[in-house]
Length: 407
Image (cartoon, rainbow, N blue to C red; front, side, top):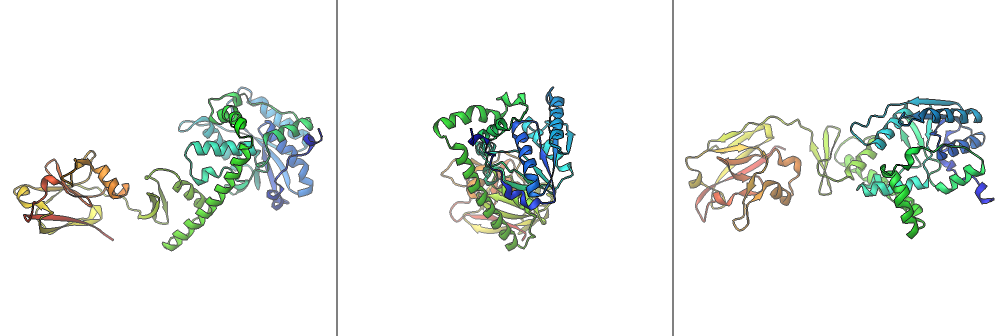
């Protein structure tokens, strides 16, 4: 019984720098936040910070009013200043969990305090890391929640991040603390509840220390994310670009660690994009309207809307067969979707998308590349070559286009 009365190991390292500052504890009325407020109330005289509490009333439960009254009464009992903030949860473009979390963050941002303390603990951390990994998150997601971060201009603290849920419950019982249970915690339709109630116990039956292991992995990932931020900072400096704020740097690493080649992060007048694991700097330019042009035999054709020019060389073999296009006009157009090309006579006709992918052409370049058509037939594409149907044979005279982007 003596072990159960031992207070959970609060991370006081994040609290020491806040001597003389105001810390607002986010209190929902659940066991975790009740224990956090009780613990920080006991440590306040020793560490010298000013303590307050804030309750976010989402209005999602018919019991929301009772929860607010419970929190107010508990704070009154401790002599801790209490504030309740009512929010509207807008889940129009996201799930309920994400919408509620966004509403809470907005509420905490509005509170007058130097720091916000939240009651996330070891189990929460492990569940968060597992959830993020299952979503395919990058380094930032796999790093889980930091013990100390930022929320706007405020410090965001999680002093119980290394404390297991069982220790929090033992402490609450030993101190005869009361708390309320949110009925939504039983809703396994919510992903985190499903992980907590179904996946967690299953993992524990085979891996008793799965929470500690995932939390340890999160620290390793966080170290890697820190290294990634340093590398990104040096990369931007090497490109002559201004250094972003630390918050933006974190967000950049998070986005670049995601999947998909459509990620574009604007910074200092350029767009930063990732293609096949490589970071590229692309000039930020508003796409200009381009109308189809007819080639009338000129040696070059300026295409300012596409940022370059087409040049045409007369060759023998390997070009567009002059005899096949004699009396016909070639048009310069952009992709509209579904175009196919057969640059190799020994292989079947293939989509431009697949050919560009194979050639390593980034997606943002494909849409603004000039294509040569003869009627409805695609004749030539930059970097891919001439369609076999129009290719000059042997030493027959031909025309070879060349796309020269500016800069």
